[in-house]
Amino acid sequence: MTIAAPAIKKLTPLDIARRKGGEKIVCLTAYSTPMARLLDPIADLLLVGDSLGMVIYGFESTLPVTLEMMIAHGAAAVRGSRHACVIVDMPFGSYQESPAQAFQSAARIMAETGAAGIKLEGGEAMAETVRFLVDRGIPVLGHIGLQPQSVNVIGGFRAQGRSEADAARVMADARAAAQAGCFAIVIEGTSEPVARRATEAVHVPTIGIGASPACDGQILVTEDLLGLSGMQSPRFVKRYAELGPLVTAAATSYAEEVRAQRFPGPEHCYGPSSLDRTAIDKKTEKPAASTRTR
Ligand code: KIV
Image (cartoon, rainbow, N blue to C red; front, side, top):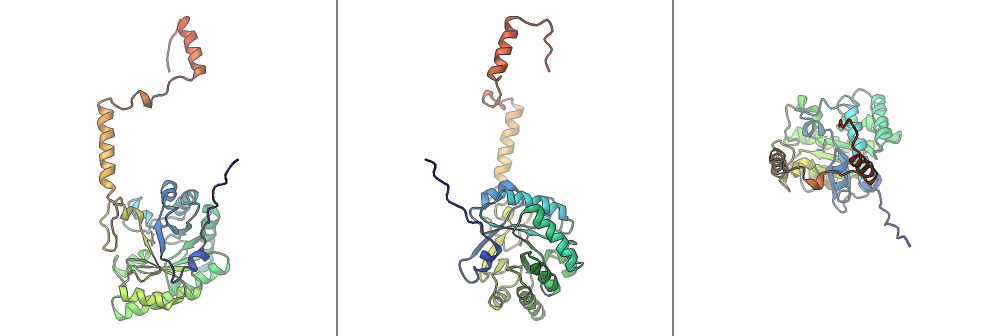
């Protein structure tokens, strides 16, 4: 008798939207199949963020990230996920020109990765585009507050919502993103009172990153919380592990063993298969004239 494995429920953008005001939504970034496999049973939402440009490609900002990169990493993360809702970031330049351009890019992401939706940065400025995408079947995760793709306009990675005018802009962006049809909104690097007010003001969940515990969920870049990003972390990151020194120690042991000829050991070597062995045994009985090896 075979016992069927329990069915795993794949979370959808609608499931995430329904979590407004309920149990906190756990979100993490994942850029690869192995990392997605590890995080998938734990997280509600996995974001293939364009932060990958800085975290794994070593760029100084997210601006050089291309649609092709996002599609390759998005497809990899989807292959490692059975439960979490996987969302892929739209990279800089792939959606800002027009709603039609955004649709072309988003449709490629959806078709070529199998992700459940896309994320794009911008509130009021992107409201028409969000509506255009949602009306055409593409779930959109909004992103307001600190928008890394606008780093050159805002003058650096600095917290938002700290002046009256800035707070009003974040609030207007939150309302615009929600009204345009975003199923949830990431609020990044925003002062606590403003993130709290924005969360109260919209009917969809907010997902904070450096935006207070008032948000309906939280997201962190996984490499930041693991101590693997190799960069100085922003104040809002909590390091849950320091894996960097573990990687260094493991690589150092490997290097020592290779140099001392202790690795590979006999247990890491392939013997001949039984078929090869018969052939080899025959050859050993009657050695051939020429014994050249490859
Ligand atoms: O690109 C990213 O990883 C993000 C999250 C930090 C929200 O946008």
